[in-house]
Amino acid sequence: MSHPPFVAHHPKHIDPQKEHPRRAVLTAVPDLRFEYGFLKSVRPYFRLRPATTTAPESPGLREGAKGKGKGKEKAQAPEGEAGTEVLEIQWLDVGWVTVRDQVLSPLVQGALWAIAAHLLSPFYPQARSFMPSPPEGGIAKWLRGWAKSFGVSNASTSRVPLYTRP
Image 1 (spheres, rainbow, N blue to C red):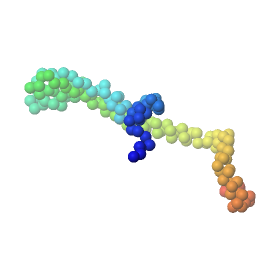
Image 2 (cartoon, rainbow, N blue to C red):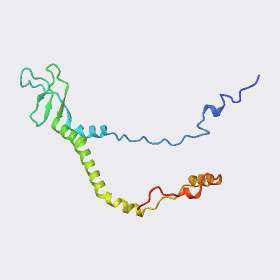
Image 3 (cartoon, helix red, strand yellow):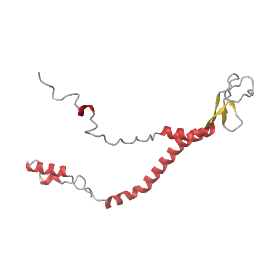
Image 4 (tube, rainbow, N blue to C red):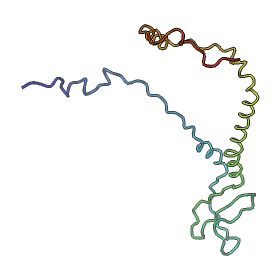
């Protein structure tokens, strides 16, 4: 009877960390999605307040009654629930943050990029003339030499320009 090439209860199989220590754990990548930044900028305009026990302004008006502040909405608690909280939303401020973040900011950024591209486009050819062209890579050079050794390419067609200026 032959034994397997390794023994499962060998100490190196029980605790592999002793022979091969782990690398340092990288930190998590921060979440840069738009939603979290937007919710953070809107958060000051939502408030939880203790429920008031005042009577509604009109007989049929319990939830959604308008507050005295500009653009504020208060939901009043039903008469039987005295220990609940009320969510107060400042709708005008929430609307302004939404329009600012989703309409005005992208519009201004796009306009600035378009103006910059339009103003800088005449300088592109001049700037391009100062930049050196990159050297031919090693693999392309080797491949061209290898093809020449077989007689596949000839010197008359290797460096013919595609477009010449009149």
